Amino acid sequence: MPAMGARCLKQIGCLSLRTYSKTSGKPKLKYDAVIIGGGHNGLVAAAYLQKSGVNCVVLERRHVIGGAAVTEEIIPGFKFSRASYLLSLLRPQIYKDLELKRHGLKIYFRDPHSFTPLLENVGGRPPRSLTLGTDMTENQRQIAQFSEKDAKAYPEYEDFMNRLVAAIDPLLDAPPADTAAIAQGSLMTRLKSLKTLRPLLKAGVTLGSQLPKYYQVLTAPISKILDEWFESEPLKCTLATDAVIGAMSCPATPGSGYVLLHHVMGELEGKKGSWGYVEGGMGMVSNAIAKAAKELGAEIYTEKTVVQILVDNQGKAIGVALQDGTEIRSRLVLSNATPHHTFLSMTPKERLPEDFITMITQFDAKSPVTKINVAVDRLPNFLSRPNTPDGKPLPHHRCSIHLNSEEMQLLNTAYEDASKGRPSERPMIELCIPSSLDPTLAPPGCHVISIFSQYTPYTLSEGRTWSNEERDNYADNVFDWIEKYAPGFKASVIGRDVLTPPDLERIFGLTGGNIFHGSMSLDQLYFSRPVPGFANYKTPIPGLYMCSSGAHPGGGVMGAPGRNAALAALQDLKLRS
Image 1 (cartoon, one colour):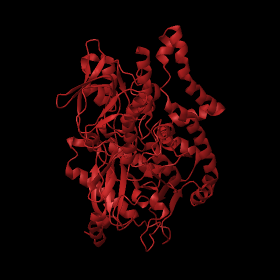
Image 2 (cartoon, one colour):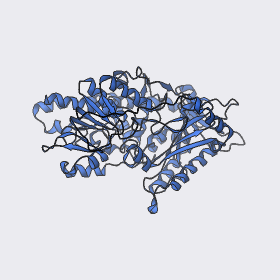
Image 3 (cartoon, one colour):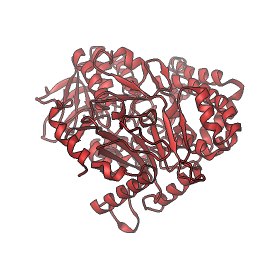
Image 4 (tube, rainbow, N blue to C red):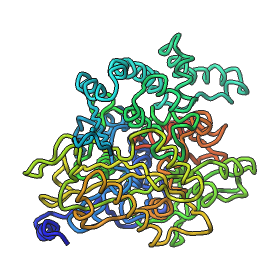
C-alpha cells in the first residue's frame, strides 16, 4: 500500500461513521397502501399518499433504503454513492412539497461541469483538454482550441436545446395523454380526458415552426445532429456521451438524442441545467425523502422482501406476501420494482392478459454499464492539467471527466465490441470525484471516485459468465486507460468495488443491470412506458400501480414516477369513495 494510503486508513478512526437509513421492527398487517421497494420513487409516492391521508408502509428488500440512490461504506472510511452518483433531475415541485432542504438535503454545485482530456502528442507540449461550464465566454475560448466555427455556433446550439428542454419539461410532471379514454370512453370521459392533451399541445406551441427540426433531434442518431452543428470531434464526442450514457446504444443509433435531453433538462434550486453532488452521497437524497414521509406518518421497513402481490377472486390487488410468509393487506399496492420483476415474478401470471405478459417480456432492459467505485489516496494527476504541489482539488477535478472521448467513432467502436458479447477494449469512461467538493466522504487527503463505464454486455460471448476473473480483467483495463491520461492513478488505489450488469441486477434489483429500469428508447417512452395502454401508472390489476422508473417519464433520480403514480392512485380512490 502507498504511504499516503496508509495515512488515509490510519485517520479512519477519526471519522464518525453513519448508519444510512436502516430501519427495523415489524409492520402492521393492514394499511391503506403498500409500496414495494424503498427506492427514491417509492419513498416519494409514500410521502404524497401519506400527505393526502392514505396510511402507507414502504417495504424494502435490502438492509438500507434508497434503491440505486444509496450511500454505502464499502471500504472503511470511504462513503460511496454506490450506484447513482449525481443529482440534477429531481423535480422542483417534489423538492418544494417535501421540504427536502429542511430534511437535510445539501447540494454542492459543480462549475465547470465537464472536462475532456485528450491523448495526443503536440510537439512536446502538454495534451489539450476541453472544459465546459456556465461561463459561455470561457466555453467559447475552450472550443476555439479546436474550431473557431464551433465556438461561434455553441451559444446558438445551447439556446436551441434549451428551447426543446423547456417544451418537454412539463410533460414530466403529468401522466401521458390518455388516448384510450379519448378514443373509446363515454362522452363525459372523453371530454375529461382531453385535458391530458394540454401538456402535449403546450409543447407544440413552445416549439412552434421549428417543430420538424426538433422532431429530428428526438428521432435521428445524435451523431447526425451534432455533425450538423459542429466539426470538432472532442466537442461532438463530449456532447454525445450524454446521449448514450446508461444506454445500449451509440451515437450512430437512431433516437439517441432523447437520452441527451434527459441529461440536460435538470434543475437544482432554481438553477437550470445544474448537476451537483449531494453531501454524504446519494443516500442522503433518499434519507431526506424518507424523513419527509415518516414525519407525515408513513412507516418504512428494511429487510422485508415482498415475494407476491396478493390478488382476490375479482382480480383486484389486496396486499402483498413477504418472504417470511407474512401477509399485509391494503387497498392499494404500488410497485417501485422494475416492470419485469413486478409482473413476471411477483404478480400471479394467471391474473394478467397473455398479450400484456408478452409485451413486458419484450420490454428492453439491456444495459451497457459497469460501475466502479474506487478509494484513492490522492487526486488523479492529468497530463493535460497537472496537479498543484499542495495536491488540492482543481476545478476540473469537480467535473464529470470524460475519457476515451476524443472522437465519436471511439464510442461507436466500443459499442460494437459489446454488441458482439465482449467488453469494450477502449471503454467510454465518465469519472467523477465527489469528495473534491464534499469532505464528508473520505479521510483527509483521500478521495472517492465514481467510474461509470461502457460498454459491458450482460451476457458474454462463447458462454462465458461474469466471473471474478472477468470482472477484474475489465476493471484492470479501465484502470489502464485512466493511467494513460493520469499517470500514477493505479498506484493511488486503496480499494475498489466493481459492479457489472449482473451485479447491478443482483444487488439493486435492476433488471438487466439497466439503471433506468428499461431502455429510454422512443418506443419505450411516454405512451409506451412500460407498454402501450398502461402508461398512466395503472396495470391490468385494479389497485396495482407502477411507481418506478419503468413508468413515465423514466429513469434518473427525479421522483416524477413516484409522485405521478401517487396522484393517479389518489384520484382512483376518490372515484371509488
